[in-house]
Length: 250
Image 1 (cartoon, rainbow, N blue to C red):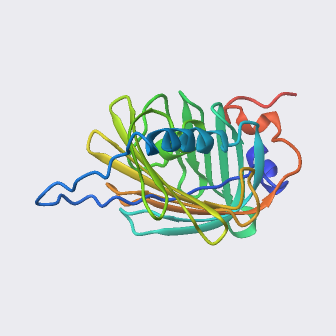
Image 2: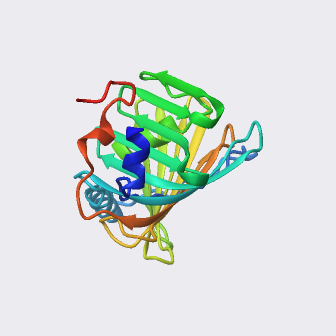
């Protein structure tokens, strides 16, 4: 199988990630937002621009270890595999189980997606939609548009900056903090009653082994934890981003 062979070769990716906070409960009284001042606003605005500039802009790949917790069945899936990322273009995630069996094969682009779970005989496809029981929105949001939106509020606290962004009908809260590897980014996205959070801890701008990300769907409680175990020195092969259902070239 083309996908499985690609994953065994080291897959393709260099990944990072982070989970956000912001409780989902409602307080009896609204908490005052510690807004920016005329002095801190330029600093906060420039800090957001710098954070956006730190995101990878060229294709990269690597090997990952992952734990996926499915809320409906309570099933926990652990595996290793590879992830290939072409920022703003495509993501391919392949997880392998016992004896190299493909447990999960996810292919996501800005306007199309396909998720296969071979052991269960499941293959699902879609377009611009993002089902709540699959991490499609996470893969799209984090790898294509992680900090998209218009900055409309910000604050600078003792632990670091916090930015509020408006992205269409979604509200995004992003917090820059410290972690044991160096740099942590916590992002929560709320849209039409649905909330997702990502907690990323990384060493630097480029992906490195040991970088990690935790994703939580705060509505469905789907959870995905990823750790980057290795980074390929070469860019991902083109086949990593092609539709898996297309016939292989002769």
